[in-house]
Length: 138
Image (cartoon, rainbow, N blue to C red; front, side, top):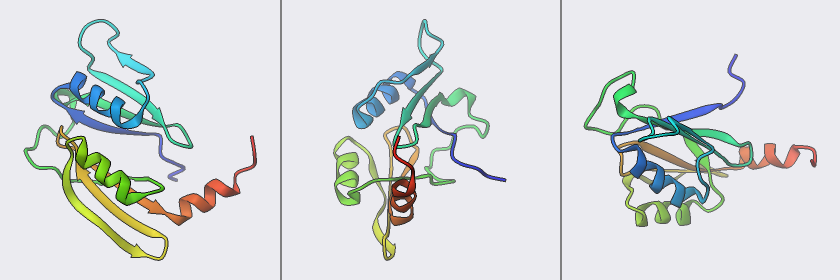
């Protein structure tokens, strides 16, 4: 039934500030902005080995309303160096949600709360690397 990650949406009261923060973090500009004129209500980046879509949506359109606490589902993104990635996020203004923890051989997780109140998960995941290595060369 579930075939793969398509889009992860984060919410922000200040979409332009969130776009600037994530552009710095990711090192790429968003490929989609809506509306094109005026302050954006939604932007989307394509990132990673599989070009997954990462969207930032104006919190006014969040289906669950606004919460003052970070929480809910944590989506983990594979990183090659979890400690360095964790430290970079904190240096950019993210706050500790969960420090790096080894979950088993080849699996380490950590999470931060971005400056806009979203939980961003990091994971060193050997399974991800194994799947990536098994892809035919393009």
